[in-house]
Length: 191
Image (cartoon, rainbow, N blue to C red; front, side, top):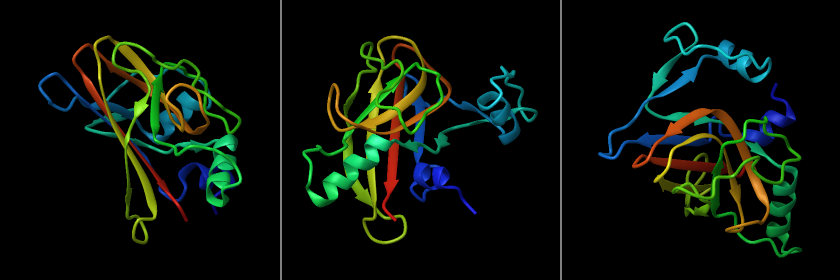
């Protein structure tokens, strides 16, 4: 049986956020993905583990993870549904370098990137099908970097600079350098 926090974080899609990193020539740069045991030791126990192929994880061409829907995000969605508030649509994606675990009470990223090609921006918004026609909101944004960062968090917002944060996710560092691009895809399934 799933817990409420698992259900609200995934919104019924197991791994609903995808990251694809490419170099200046458009070639995919693989990520190291920790296996479940190593991920638990890293996330819950705070242990730093070496990236040893097969022992602690493997390299993948895309990183897919689950997110956490925030309390403020749930309230804003409820407001948008019945029109009782003035919340704008959630169409902005932000990335950052913060490492504190995501919590339902979060209202912002810990350390949002605002320079070097990593600033918050409007994503391409669409509806796609997960279970029934058009039941999933999809946001896709590609960052083109002019600086280097260790990206470790991302979130969905309804404003270009402030606004309400719908969802947040923290993950192992995605190291980007000048001329890299990072495509971020969020899917929020309405069940």
